[in-house]
Length: 297
Length: 297
Image (cartoon, rainbow over all chains, first blue to last red; front, side, top):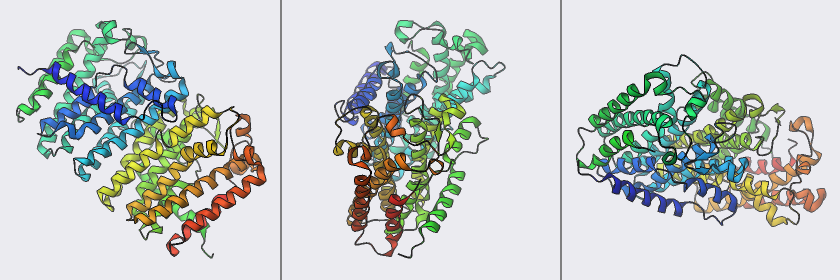
């Protein structure tokens, strides 16, 4: 494959960052500390994987990615909100994220809670902006998909199950994959499929994208678990071994490192197979599947 | 006026409670503790003022209130989310709400944060349900209105300004009313106007409702401040004097009790005047304006 994923990702990150800068209230608007806290966490070196999936989902079905840029920004706001809240002392109590102090360390707990809340509310206003280029019906579909992926049956529910599973013994693969499919997979999937839906995806195309998305979500999580054991602390921007410390159920704990690497490769292959009916417009998604298992941060 | 507000409110509370029970995931669904926490705070004796405003807004323009019941449930979810988060130790640190222990006291801080988050996400999926009876364009308008009323320029921004104003001297009426217009008023207004928008309100009708809503929002807040000084602790379900204890900027602090009562009555009169062009369909709104300044809890 001659597709230049590095350039593709860099360009879409830049689109997303520029659009986020426009969509977020300026740091000096009332109340300034809130907007500063929102911007601090949003512009803290995120990979922008969810926005890129939203844009690539639009492109895969022949759409113009710029049409779904507000959706791309929205899913990044939701991802950032979840990181801010997960890092709070009452939840994961993390002081570092991507090499920088977390929101509550810089702005205090009250502001961190409220900055997260504000990012979640903003996200739905942003998705509604997609009506400029997509039908109102499809925009409502996207809003529902993203809301469900964020809520009790998605990200928040997965986070609760993850917390409740700490220190539990006897979790099997179904338990672990259920937690991750909700905590991480649901929003990845919703980003991808709602991007495609906004650009007129057929039902058949959506079915294929759902399969692709489920597999890359799995591959993403397994790779995350592996990186927590043997990644590069400088590249990850956080200390290794946090899963071990919290006694979390992980793939390496269940299948060992070699077994986990094999599972990640199989998930990547299954993701590529799901795209068999797509033409070259899906090359970014194909390259992303490889990137997700080969990344080092 | 012969309108029976008591029966009107009781019926709409029951509609809202029944619908919320259906829209919320069952308490036993995975993860059960999360759903139990969401239900605990939602069904904890709230007045359902925001749902009633959404339903009454629909009725005022000749719409069927049942068409906007998902919106009514959504704004109550958002209100409940804000109470759960405001009560957290890092924010107002309140252990009692409506006479019952607050969410973090019962379920712990992590679950309280996440239950609030889940209620906010659910709200936008619920508003999208209004597409069954309203045009998709109008449903998107409602989603934008409610998202903006909840976010940095509305409820969350107002809460931040409120926290930052604690202990400050020299706040004038403009400062106080700006805080309350965002913290409390914005969602009351969005409930009312989006209910009307979903049912085909004209631009002129919306202008009148905006005026009405701004005045009852003001009246509501002044009355809240008065009740915190001289209400009935049993009826309020919380100890008096919490504003004094936190040295908050309040109307009684600025205008005295008599001056505050007069301001509340003037706001009520201005709200009624804004409804001059409406027919009997707006009688519930007229009665609600009186209720808001005369309530005892």
